[in-house]
Length: 218
Image 1: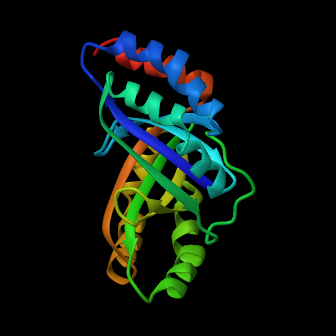
Image 2: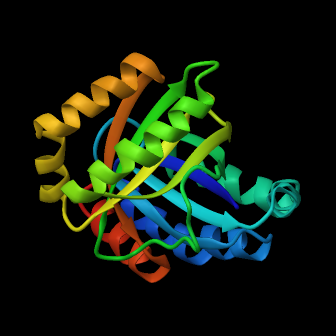
């Protein structure tokens, strides 16, 4: 399973035009070329572009075929008239976190943790993840939904995607001594260049509404 993520910031003063473009041009073209657009994310806490549009495809070949189309190149170029800081990334699901399906889960929040895995610790890391890190986070209130490997884009890093009921739940978890101790273990034995972000996920219809609301003040 692969995730294709496009991220950007909206140019100040172009909010209304941008929203109309996304709804009437960008999203329909993405669907038309074969990218299964499932929704998006709005970054609430953390660095990086605030808005992301997310496509979920079962195989790399279908994404590659979509990205090679003239329509994808044309609409992506048109998008630059309304946004800045555009980037994209291709993520592949690893097998370290069992999952049956993937969805946006409207009404929840994401706690995403990014890092590079140190060389030669893959087996020990997998055991730590399954036996300690994931169970503790779930007990505290954050369910690790899936682990992604960023295979194309800025940096070859891992992404642990966590789901919580509210931003308050996430804040409470990261302030606990239990989480701090376990994260310290993660960084001392298995990972480097750690960062995290809190995101509000949206569905396809809800994303359109949220992007419109966000850009009203731009």
